[in-house]
Image 1: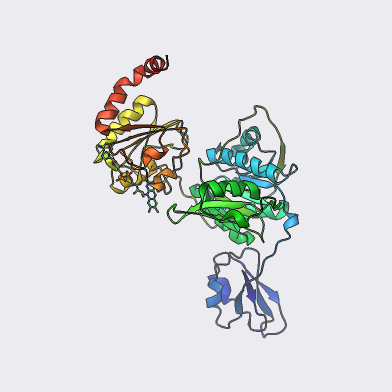
Image 2: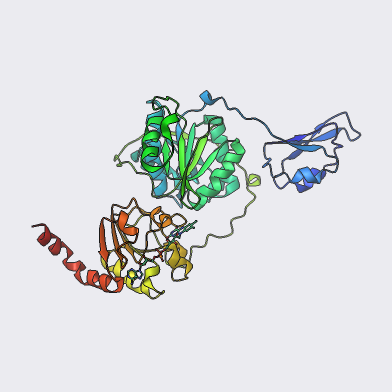
Length: 435
Ligand SMILES: Cc1cc2nc3c(=O)[nH]c(=O)nc-3n(C[C@H](O)[C@H](O)[C@H](O)COP(=O)(O)OP(=O)(O)OC[C@H]3O[C@@H](n4cnc5c(N)ncnc54)[C@H](O)[C@@H]3O)c2cc1C
């Protein structure tokens, strides 16, 4: 999309200036009207289109432009290394791992690069962590104006870096910030974005293997020897009932947001280093239309499901809200955190921050206890890659048992207290059972 001024119709009245929220209009001299000037649009335009209807002379039009990027100009995989208050989000490290894998599948000389945006004092110490988890290069965009995330400020800075260094792929975590940031960049760059991906492939052959195992797609038309290296971005759609694979063949960068907890971190290599590129940004206070007044942390108990090694989740089988007291007791005993199904959240028994699943958090703990949870596909989408799944359900036919490593058929109100009682003896019992 582009906004175009039809000079012959513009009378230089400046009406469009007053409706533009981005301050994107200027005058330029023109000798074809009485005032001797016409409006001109600068790079601040956000394509909001408010000026189209404001111009009474029909002098502003929206133009569709066929974009065909010179694909060869773009190289390397970037990961937006999201940080908050000088702490990297876990998903950034997961994406560096995934980005590394994709980069090497594209070619040996394709690099995975982390992009750090923020205040110098917050981001400078993070570059080494990015290197240790696999980044080969770190782009650092530092400014006091970028201390806290703002859509305007970060988009401005990232767009400058993209224009200068032309990455082929950019991955963002599908966090609240990533989901806000990536679409704004995509619109600015006139490129494609696939949201909430759970799988990425470069090689057609590995995509075919995946599709054969996990979908009903007819793969006979796909050539396993195809050498194209565009990414195939797969994401669940229609409530998880359909897996959609989306490609971005004509524009660059190819961009995806990826769910936290889905991709694998690399084993960190202590002391690993790489190149740091300081990117100068021209961002100014005028470019940021948001005033951050305060950052308020939720007064509710903080739940860190993504980082938990053990999760004890309760579902509708608890019967009522008080059932979560038992789940909390269970979690405290085994050193875990409390999760839940959406049914329990919808019933008002527990806050949404505990919800695991497609519309909640994706988790990958060492042990996931599913208590009174049936195993609907939308719940499984958020926990089925857990290392060990233990299901407690009174219905032996509940679908949760299909993904469970250990299943206990029984009333959770009888089973969980027994586990709590026996937990301290667990090691002894295990030793005895394996002798
Ligand atoms: C677009 C969309 C997105 C969704 N996103 C999510 C999501 O992110 N997360 C999510 O969880 N759901 C999600 N859902 C909802 C999902 O489809 C299911 O409705 C939900 O997961 C069911 O929750 P549940 O297993 O707790 O309840 P139920 O399906 O009602 O299962 C309760 C289970 O408890 C067992 N039970 C009952 N009493 C006991 C007892 N005393 N002891 C032991 N077992 C007992 C029953 O046998 C049953 O299997 C989504 C749905 C849609 C359409």
